Image (tube, one colour):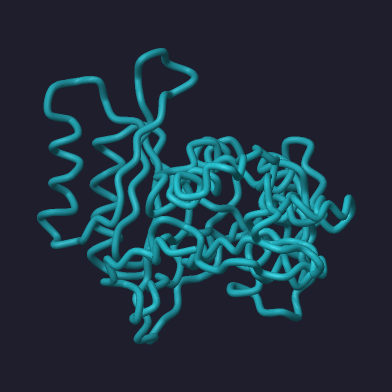
Length: 296
């Protein structure tokens, strides 16, 4: 199976693809999220180079990745799985490098922001924006500077022959990114499985008083738990919005079928983006509010 992801080898998205599909799947790197969707899609000029795509959709600290919400509507692909990846940034450098000699650290701007305390405590080290965490690690391996490091996963460090000068450099220990698996065809929701399902939908609400209240009441009256609500501007209608909802349950369940049937009369352009097994945060980390040590 070929899995498309955004970034270079060693990226967190590649780690997510391994979590979803195993190390035996072939991970294919692409430059942009749009390229990932095109690699899976065979419509709208897509190339269909990959069987699945893996995209980040939200981070527990930084919030939603809006571009990927928009791409889910632009492409008629289906969500077939999800996983949560704990993001742990390591300070990676050449095997010969010493921490006291580091003067510059490269990484994606979000990773640099997530490690702001490290830079506040080491003001002699300059954060430098790079296009990708793993790309920053690769640049160290290629350029071989003794005074420059990268913030990326330890997996990226091993891939590019770098050593970890510091581990767990991020401000918060509970830093998770939720990734989605996308495919050309929907996967049938598991039947008779003890593992709970999640369903994702998108729709436009009628522009009238109480419309969203009535929509949410469809779920409340059936005791369906809502996991997330996201709104995005509707490009076809200025200052009107599309809504995305993730909720508990699969499309094969009676109460979900009833809810979707009622929603079709209350919404415009209702679309089921996918019904898939729900991922859980690792138990040992789910309720942790601890922060990483501030000591170097």
